[in-house]
Each structure stands twice: as C-alpha cells, then as structure tokens.
Length: 206
Image (cartoon, rainbow, N blue to C red):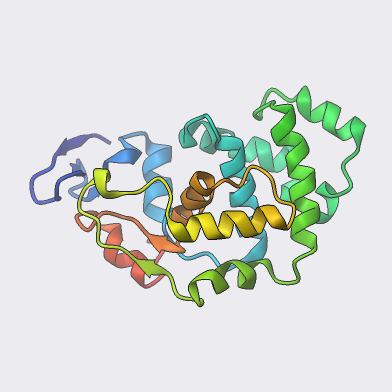
C-alpha cells in the first residue's frame, strides 16, 4: 500500500492506493495503516483495554509508536495479558525475567512502573468511568486540518495526568496522556480530510 497524493485530502492527509485519505502519520506500513483504520481514535470503554493502552503508551516514551505496535503481542505474552491482578503481584524474579525478554522494551523503570500502575489501577473501582468522567462521558470532537494543528498536550491532558500521578501512576505525563486520549478516542484527532474522521464520531471500528 502506498501514499500517492494529497489532492482532495486536506493539508496533511494522504490518499493511498486504495483511494482512501488517511492521516499521514501512519505512512504506508500495513500494520500501522490497519491500526489507524481500526483502532486509533475509536472510543474505548473497556477498563482493561484502557489500562493496557495507558501502559503501552508509557513504554513508548522516547520511542515511536510503531515500535511498540510491533511488540504488542510480545508485551501481552510477557505481562500475562495485562492482567492487573497478576501484574500487581510481580516480584523480583518476574521483574528479572522481564528484563531478559528481548521481545519487549527492557527499561527497568518502565517495567517497575507497570507493577505500580497495576496496583493503582486496582484501587479505582471503575477505571473506564474514572477516565471518561474527565469529559463527562462524551468524546471531544476536534476539526483539525493539518498535522501542525495537533497539540502535544492540552489542559485536559494535564489535569488527567496530575490526577493519575496523585493516585500513584507513573509514566503518565501530559504528553503521554494526550497520546493515550487520542488513541482511545477520548478525543477525535483524525484530520477532517481523513476517511476515519467522521467514522469515529459514531464509534465505528471500520
């Protein structure tokens, strides 16, 4: 799949060989394009799925998302399917094995933070409701026409980040939190020229 031109797609969206306009950040990598078309920006309400994505965004810090995406299945295997109850009990032996796992990002601080974050997650009765309450349960619909208009963070992301950190979460700075909000559809940051912009307004995965 290749990106051909911008004609009719807006400033930063690109028309691909299949005739669809997409946000240009996904490039032409089939895995990245599939993620863009089926996951990114779709409102997510499942607490466990939200927990997984928040942790993966933390692991992304300093890296590209495609790097994490390519390792996502390895992360799921290594972290017991991101089961917070299992993760909250990880001890030195498990942490040591994770540090030897070449299929994931072997960063000790991030791995240790995953345990802390699982414990913080379990202290919140309904993680999904907790997050969505920051937006009164309604995804924020943006109308961005260029990649240059997409912010790295927002006041709402800063507010959510501050509260998460107060509750014991780590690797949840406002930039990470805003990337998480974009990915999980708390905000719709698909460019208006992208074929997914209107679709995710209605929670459509395809």
